[in-house]
Image (cartoon, rainbow, N blue to C red; front, top):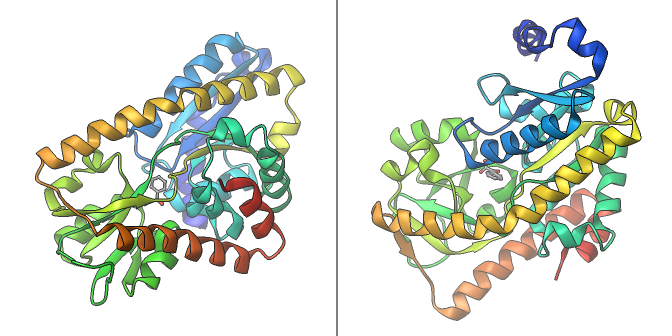
Length: 321
Ligand code: 173
C-alpha cells in the first residue's frame, strides 16, 4: 500500500496542471481500473472531453491512466481518501470498503430509470456514508456477464474446475462447485496460458481487448447479471465544487447513461466476433438455463443481504424488475 502511494505521488504531481491554469478553475484527476484500450476507457475519454469543453476552464478533468498508473483493486480506496478525485471502477473492485458496492451488478432496470425510482438516492446515501464517495453515474448497461471456459461442460456443474473470479462471480461459481481464484483482469491471460485456471468470468463484450480469445474455447450461455462500471468521486472534493460544476458533471453522467443503449450493438458485434474466433457456445435446455440464470440472482441477493442486512433488502426492492 505504502509503496504504491510512493510510486503514485510523483506521477500525480506530474499530472497536475501549472499553477496559472489551476487558479482559473478546478482540475479533477481521474484514474481507471480498466485498461486504456477498453471500450470503458473510450467512454471515459468521451465524458472527459465533453466536461472539458463545456467546463470552459472552470472545470476540467485530467486522465491519469489505467492499471499501469494504479492497481485496479486500489482505485476505490484512492477515491475514498482523495488520492485521486474521480475513479472509473466496478463495485466488485472495492468490496473491501463496503460490500454493497458489488450489488450494482444485480440491477435489472436501466440506469436512466434507477435515477428516477429512488435507487440513485439510496446508492448515494450508501456511497456517501460508507465510502466517502459521490456516485456520479454508470458507464456500462445492458451487458450480461458470462462464464468462459477452456474445458467443455454439459451441465451447470463446475466441480473440479478452477475459475478466475472477482466478487462479481465468486458466490455464484462457488455455488456451482467451482474452485475460485481472484485476479485483476490483467492477470487472466497468463493464468489461462499457464493452466492456473480453466476459465473466467467476464462480460459478453471485451475479451478481445486482452487477447483472451486465443485461450478461450467455450462461452456458457445464458449470461447473467448486468455488468457495472461506474464513475465515482471523492465526496469532499464533490462538496467543494460549485453548484454549476456539480450540475455539469451530473449532466454529462446522465448523457453517458442515455447513450448506454449503444452497448447492445457492441455486445452483438463481440458475440459474432467470438464465434468467428472459434469460441463455441455451451447451452443448456430451457429449464436448466432458467435454473442457472435464477440461481445467479438467488445467490447474488442472498449474499448481498447477508453482508448488508440493512441496505441489501432496500437495494433489492429498487434494483429488481
Ligand atoms: O474483472 C471482472 O471480471 C469484473 O468484475 C468486471 C466487472 C465489470 C466489468 C468488467 C469486468
